[in-house]
Image (cartoon, rainbow, N blue to C red; front, side, top):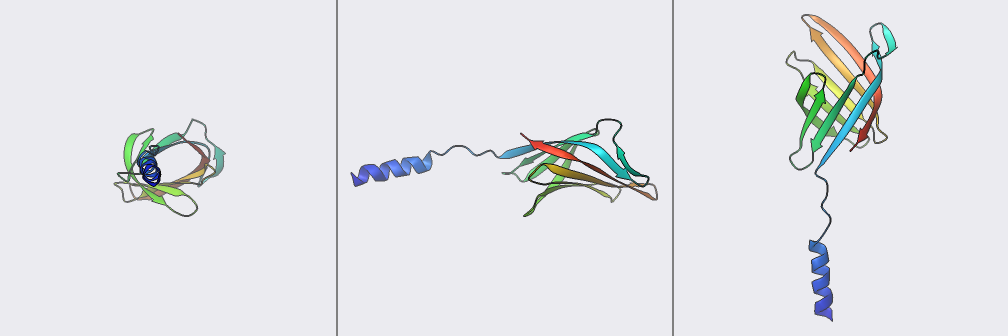
Length: 124
């Protein structure tokens, strides 16, 4: 009987449900702040982030195509960072509730053009 229970326990340990190795966040940002104030976004602003927990690689799909990003996981949320060729960075922070903020620290020639977008992300 002991051998039968041990065999059953070993089999149960080996047969476990597969865990998802990636997660996708679909984000929509209906509000924006910039140097002139806080505004409703006039044209849909959305992006998608995909993170593979096995390879530790992440990408962002937005209005300009696909970009490699870095994912930082903290105690209270996740942040996706996109370093730009200009030396600036764009970041998106997502809370477990789905609340999110996307910050752009753009540089155009010798001028900084900051903006923030506020919205929600859902997972799939």
